[in-house]
Image 1 (cartoon, rainbow, N blue to C red):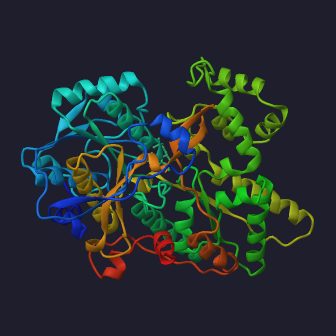
Image 2 (cartoon, rainbow, N blue to C red; image 1 turned 30 degrees about the vertical axis):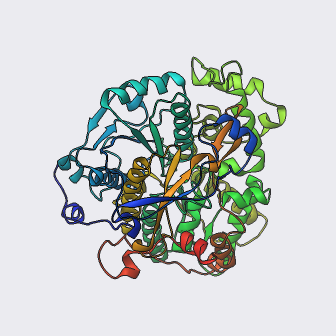
Image 3 (cartoon, helix red, strand yellow; image 1 turned 180 degrees about the vertical axis):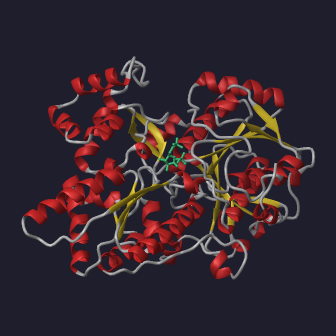
Length: 550
Ligand code: FBP
């Protein structure tokens, strides 16, 4: 594989490990744990993996050095640092015993079910150290939830003599990891399952998990791009840039980019919902800011939009909830099958309330179509396919034209549109993500050698220097509650949305009026890998603000 100069230099970077993982470890166990909600139901569903203690690793004189064979799976959307989790796990199992083996299942959870895999070697692993992407083994969104899949996976697990499976994924994939761990434990198969918190969206975090990996690098990449646009915007002074950023339902990415770049406007879906804002309220909020800046002679600006916004507008949220029910076959709990998109849309229109139908009909044709069509395998509306940035800018343009007719001064309104998502998911990991991911992978090897299953690999205290990071594991059941998904109540990991009383949002809310009127742009520039620590080793502003209060 040909390498760029940066890749070559970066390959030599040795990611940092917490002090506790630099030699033999012992597992120190806390008290029994409880799930975040619906304790009785979760306990019943996970009798073998419920209530286990939180584990923290501490340096020890010696440790269990039996060889272990591990299989790893990359699940869902790419996130910078995934390769380093694999490298950390590889180095971790080899450091226990040279004859340990690491297998990679290809193209996501489907690789386990279909027995598609490779065995990692030193040469293979070395090609991928500190690189972005998931191409080391590929990723996929196959949902691992059926007994047939677990049993099919077991055949290859037995054939390869695998002791444990590590699943690198977001909340949905880790929920599935927990179900798999419970199943293998209940069957007494002796196969351990460990999860790893991945997603650029930043919505897999809680009291125990400070951040999901990839969020740092993805936000820094988007912020570089937004900063570049802001500089262009401030140079030409003729466009309003509507910039949608990924993040699925949660607005963490939008908020972090706003904290880094200080755009004129940033919408936060969670606030839109809390304030019960309609689509028209959102449009009016933007249009007012545009008109105010026009009064100052500033016919330009930036608007950052979280991709899941549409799902949080209360009327649309209600509509989506009913669409999800209608699109699920109650007999099987599986998505209904249709011969064509048109047939699916007709079925939907014939089976929703008049109120929801009116909301659906009020939306532009392409948005309407996307809401009615298939969900991803985990039942999520594919919000990245909805062009909210274009929808909003068209509606703002219309509103301004109406105001102009009424004699108000609204200035000129020229627009540009951007969607930043795929641009950031495979970026070369920042030092933070390179170190964090390597530690998560290495740490997973110690959870396995200590006999744990149904745990998520966890590294905490990450705003401190890496040597002081705390390594350990958290039972996945601890993060679970029951939620309505695809027309049924399911045990799932609770998704972390932006907290309106949290420090990052409060900081943003305290400054946004000033940023809206003035041109207070910050241009963060590209991620730096070498140089002064204050340039190269900073975590996200979200994490820094969240940890400050503690
Ligand atoms: P995960 O939740 O699997 O980490 O994926 C994150 C994400 O990048 C979202 O931000 C986005 O909505 C979605 O994936 C896009 O999915 P796809 O890669 O299938 O187009």
